[in-house]
Image 1 (cartoon, helix red, strand yellow):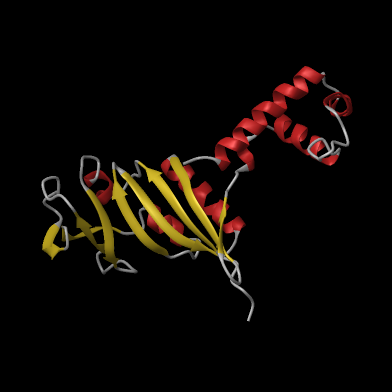
Image 2 (tube, rainbow, N blue to C red):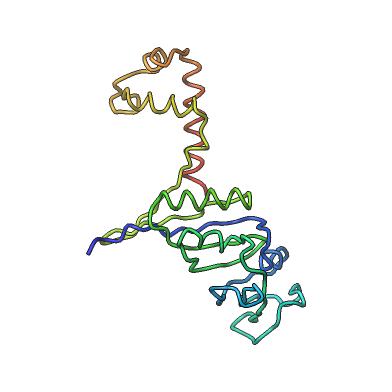
Length: 213
């Protein structure tokens, strides 16, 4: 049996459209999913159940079922197949295992088989919903789980990527360095100051992605 190499991803989707529970949490209400049907009924509707901690902002179309811990369970139906974030994730064969909502945002947890699938999921969500933040990634190994960082190459311009790749290939980041700024800049056909500007901006973007909260 091969060791697991999948990735557990926790994403924040801000202001998703076609999501009733996100709109409920725009005030002080927060909630989490209990269950949802896997396929639409005959009318094309999907049934979901959520626990909300505040009943004042719950719309009439959500039916209160019973009290559950510190909140109450509500059941509602919504149109299926409209491209809500959960459905979008699951089109990549990545079942959503946890859904929470607060401050008008959805917090989704799912397991992706590899990094390429994860990138495709994030790209699809950003194209449909706009703001998607990768909050945490975990990759399992034979004896432990380790944190991962998803750095999207699209954050860098073509020139910034070229500068980084050339600097890396020439050993600029090695210790001790095998090439200095002037040598890398000459190879790229740019001035040393231009090389420094591109490198600094690329490093700032990468560090921002690595150190994001």
